[in-house]
Amino acid sequence: MTSENARANILARIRAKQGKAPAATAAEREAVRAHIAAHPQNARPRTGWDPMARFCEQAERLASTVDRVETLEGIPAAAARYLRHGGLPMTAVCWEEFAGLPWAGAGVEVVVREARDEDFVGVTGAFCAIAETGTLVTLSGARAAAGVSLLPETHIAIVRASRIVRGMEEAWGLMRAELPHAAGESSGALELARAVNFISGPSRSADIEQTVTLGVHGPYRVHILIVHDRAQVTP
Image 1 (cartoon, rainbow, N blue to C red):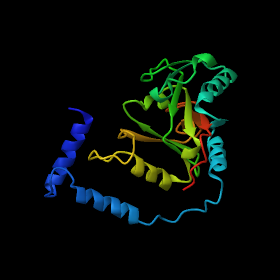
Image 2: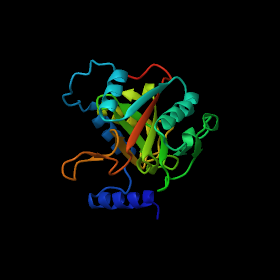
Image 3: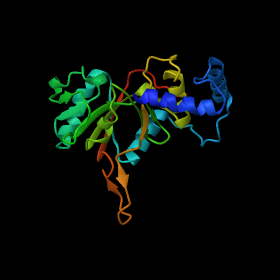
Image 4: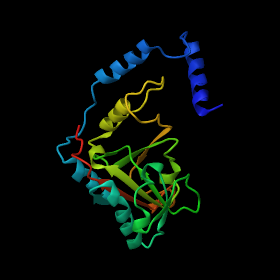
């Protein structure tokens, strides 16, 4: 049984206990969407800052490093500079989305697959980035394994400038607008995400003697490449 079927069976049993049909009706789904759309946002801090500048500032405060490139084709060269400067391996496991970029010309060898223990560098995209906190939002799926951002010691994340949003509320709004709904109808071209991950800098923990240590539960390093594809979104 697939995870999708197991999920559907669990929800069907819950709905049966509520005296409802196994699957939600179109009217039920529309009522939920209307409720979410009509619900006012809670109080928020002032957000008069520039989203790009704020994101870079917050990401660096969290010990991420940030670089900018003009086009997707410039990513391999920028990644290579970062790896050489840090004395890091010039090999990486990569999401399928970026496998066709000119990596070989930049001296970087990439392979598309799940991350393994021996992988030191992982290259992924990001669904969006949250300026308020310097956080990356990644969605895992069949062609975007979550482990590529979690298992290697170094995570290189690619995010488009147009996908830098002000806050968490805008990030969830993008997901509701662009991801397929559970019933199958899609308001965007993306596949249904298996998991949503929020990445705020390198992994860290202070569980041992209250001393902050990087890389305990994930990457030691997070390097963010911002692609200036077009005017950034500032909802």
